[in-house]
Image (cartoon, rainbow, N blue to C red; front, side):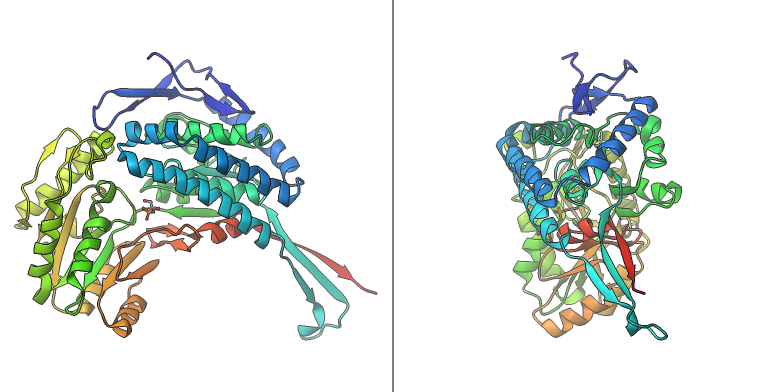
Length: 478
Ligand code: G3P
């Protein structure tokens, strides 16, 4: 157990010259589960050099061959799902079943990206000049999409495999190289995933995976002159990165405080089922989790009692046993959640269940009668704690949603489709789901946050486009 997982550079598995490692704690047992290399800045420099050289050659590999390599990686990923799923259970306490589906979903995402890339990257544009005033038809413009260069991919702990491939595959199909910095919790799942790309036979140096302490290599990576694009998913760090990064396109998906507006005419069973699924799946550790319920006063009691009945059925325990609620990722995360809970208690919110915590395991909690002066009304717990705010009109709900700095998704429950569309239009957030909980997938749908929730848009097609730039050649006729 003194083993330290190697990092991946130049097509090889390597030990860092630092002689140091980073320990990964199992969130449930709070014991050291794995160790990874603490890479040095010099090693990062070397990785960017190789990536740049590999990218130049990769951009010349025919598109259909790049797609073929990705399809191979997708198949390998599905074939090797077991070791990755095991890491997701041990490193981030993801329930076993969800861990397997994350890997399968990732294989599908890679294949879809390869197919989509083949189609959209084969299209260019041809323009003639005489449509613009003052021009004759003597200029012919041919434009197509070319890669950006080296993409720095930084996925978060909650989907260390899926949100890594959602950055790697669009980058590679478009002819870019990728430097992956996996989250510390989830790094070993990430290394296994990279192994599948290794087995698929991508050129040496094209994809590398650097592990280490954020404090030592975090800024060094994001501010590295070798970076041509940053694709980041995570928390506040994203805002700091956006301030430091220079002149490179950014794709950022940060936090969310997705509101669930439930109107008088809603199907309350449907709403309750989605509040529970949306609020408590993976113990609320999803950017797209339902993070505040805004219920019209007249139906709030009935909704709350339906939600409570479902919460009572959630199982709490170990991810290995497929428990619905498992330990949150770290002690500091559990402490943060507890801070929000205490604040709501002190300010007079109603607890529908008893607050209970053992180590990093927090029992599911619905907090009713939350008011705007409570932190829980605005902040993102990233845990199994969900506030209910009672509202008297839909406008009040819309106002609450728009007053938050987070603006990822949101949802509205009503049987009146016209009302639903008007509310969706009024909610200033990246996506509004009608009669279902927020969700990123299916993975080819556009996925974006407004305000502090992000920059740019993801989803397979948008990510491919974002990781390219337009190049034109103009033929000037005599
Ligand atoms: O938290 C990351 C975000 O991408 C959530 O994805 O699939 O759980 O909606 P999903």
